[in-house]
Image 1 (cartoon, rainbow, N blue to C red):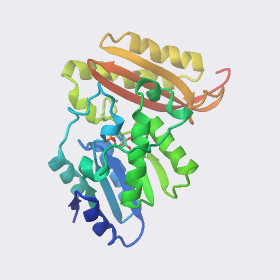
Image 2 (tube, protein in one colour; image 1 turned 90 degrees about the vertical axis):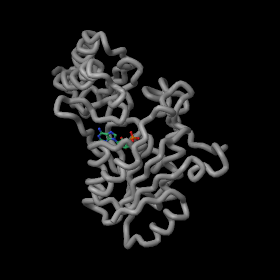
Image 3 (cartoon, rainbow, N blue to C red; image 1 turned 180 degrees about the vertical axis):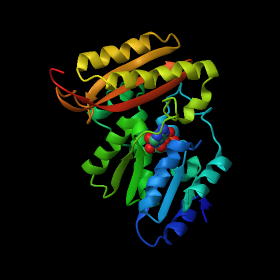
Image 4 (cartoon, rainbow, N blue to C red; image 1 turned 135 degrees about the vertical axis):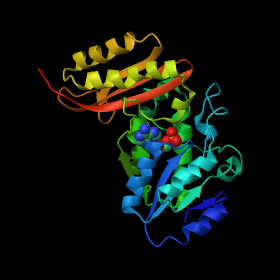
Length: 277
Ligand code: AMP
């Protein structure tokens, strides 16, 4: 049985019944297989899994898609039931921010200023603030986040460590469509033609990751993106796994952000660099 609760008091009553560890998956709803994979990984380890569904106004910029972000609670609840989730917490804005927007918020530090942080001012501060609140409200022992939002995952890990939050943060690899497109709630904004153009992102990352010389990696990925007129690249970046400078040899990450029509999409893959490859 999956319980649906909306208020923090109702949530607390459900959490009081937890027999042991509490696992949490945070989402903005419009659930897809990527979210469901997080639930499955959580459920495998923990008997008590909480899914939060909250479109957090604090992490959207003034010209972003907060108003039009898809809201599909009935379908989301079905998905959570099918995955054996214990509690779905779908709070209102007032339940999360009873006094209005908080005056004390998280500062993401230097890692929050690059890549997505450079393109979306305030986004990571808003994201970390709500993650911290939801970790507290759900009494999370372990929380699962997708590698699809790689910088988000890195920042949440950092926050948990730097501020001794006492919660375990676990990353889950990106779930893709058969043709490579990373699953995203925003994919539903794409027309069929735009969806075809959007495939250039995963194709570029795949081609780049097949190379091992840093310059060749970027050139291979960049060429595919340039050849797709429907894609306007925001950034294509090769970094270390920690999002610092790419190493000469070893584990690295290739990340892309681009606009297809008015939809902003992000994706990333792991790769291994080799000196003198
Ligand atoms: P969102 O609802 O977009 O805020 O995402 C909620 C959680 O699901 C985040 O931890 C995301 O990184 C994760 N997620 C979203 N899309 C995917 C995907 N395609 N594969 C794996 N995790 C994902």
